[in-house]
Image 1 (cartoon, rainbow, N blue to C red):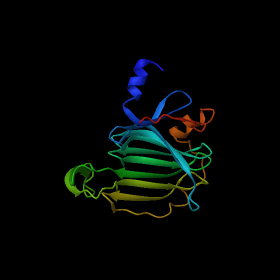
Image 2 (image 1 turned 90 degrees about the vertical axis):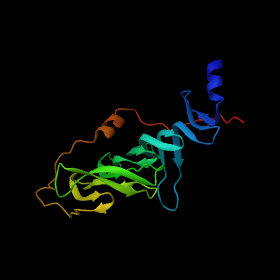
Image 3 (image 1 turned 180 degrees about the vertical axis):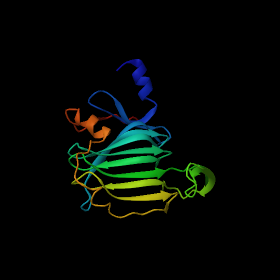
Image 4 (image 1 turned 45 degrees about the horizontal axis):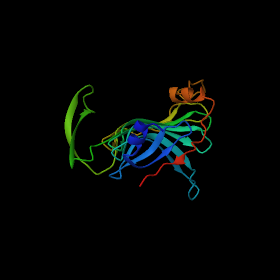
Amino acid sequence: MSLSEAYSQSKWKSYIISPKGDTLNCVDQQGKKQGPWVNHFDEVRGEPGYEEEGIYKDDRKEGTWRLYTLMGDLSGVEYYKWGLKDGVCQYFGMNGSLQREESWRALNPDKLYDTITVEDVEHLDHYKTVIIKNEGAAIKDGVWKFYDPMTGTISRQETYTLGKLEKPSGQQTAASTAPKTVAKPKEVLDFEKKIGKKKVKVQDGSVY
C-alpha cells in the first residue's frame, strides 16, 4: 500500500477491501457511511435474501442502487435522494422481465415542511406549488405500473399525486394485453452482457 493510500484509508473508522482492491463500506470517524457500499441480507422468515450496491453520502443512500438475488441476478434498480426513494424504481423477475415500476418523490428530511412543484391534475401542463409536511418517508407520486409476467404488458396501473391515489385502473382490455414480444429494460440487457455477477468477497479493513 502506498503512503497516499494509507493516509486516505486512515480517515475511515472501518472499511472493507474488494477482490479488485477497491475500498468499500467506509464508515467515517463520525460513524457515517460514505462512498460505495455493498449490503447483504440473508433470508428472514420466508422472505428471500438479497444484496444491494450503491453510494452513501453522509449516511444516506444517494443516486442509483442495484438489487441482486443471492444467486446474482439483477432484481431491481432504485433511485435515492436524501436517503429516500426518488423517481421511477424498477423491479424484475427471475427471467429478467419487468414486474413493476414504482414512482416516488423524496422530501428533504432536514426540513419540517418542503415546497414542491406538481402538475395540476385538472389542468394538464399547468403546475402549482404546494407545501408538504415532512413525515420522514418518501411518498408515492406518479404512475405505478404492474406487468403481466406472461405477456409483458401492463396488467394494472395506479396514479398517485403526493401520496393520494388519483386514478386507479383495473385490467386492460383483452386487445391491449394480447401476447407480444416486449423488449427487456436497458438495465437488464446491460446486466446480461456481463458474464455474471460474482459474490463480493472482502477482507476486513477496520482500523481503531
